[in-house]
Length: 75
Image (tube, rainbow, N blue to C red):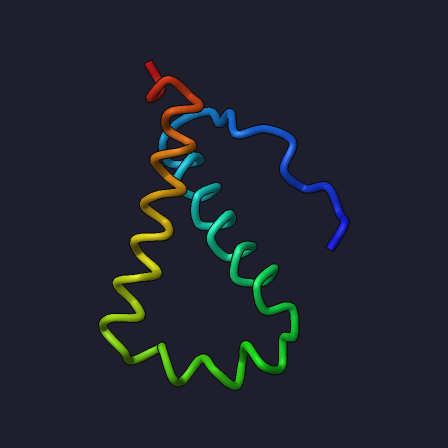
């Protein structure tokens, strides 16, 4: 994947920042496992697993912390 899609972490506000954090998280999974067929095949394994869902939420939270810090917490 060589497309340039992330040009800045600066966002208009927290909502946009959270959406960027989700995008960062999803892109991270896509970079780690680029085969869409494998991703879809594995989805049932984690879709109903509380530990997997919590781990995914933690990744989003870390990315949101990064985006919030880049935006000086929208002050």
